[in-house]
Length: 129
Image 1 (cartoon, one colour):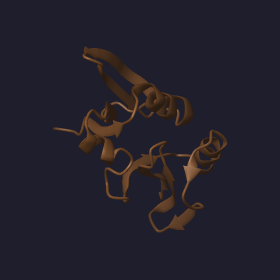
Image 2: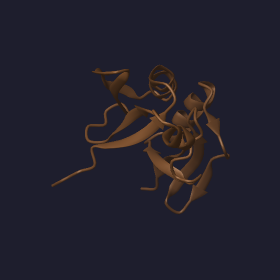
Image 3: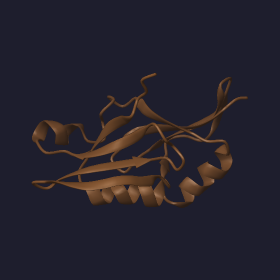
C-alpha cells in the first residue's frame, strides 16, 4: 500500500532548521546529503518514525522565501502525536518552543498549537483512547 513519505517544509537556512527540529523538537536527522550548488537533501523525522518525515528545503527564490513560515496560510499544517502530552509539552516549552495557546481538552484528545522557528503551525496532540 502506498504511504506518504516526505512533506516539504521551506526553510531559510539548513543548519538553523536542523538545529530547531533536531535539538529543540527532538526529531532525528535521517539524512543530510550534499546535492551540489549549495543544495542539500535534508530529512528529519520524529524519533521512531519510519514512514513519514520532513524534507527541509532551503528557499532559493523570492517566491519561495515569501512562503517560509506560512506554507499553509496560517492554518495548522503539521500534527505531532505523542503518548505523553504533558511530558512533551513541558519539554518543548523548556526548550523554548513557542506555544500559541494553553493545552485544551477536546473530544479527540488533548492538544496545543505551537510554531516552529519560522512560524509554521503544528498541533501537539495526544489522542483520546
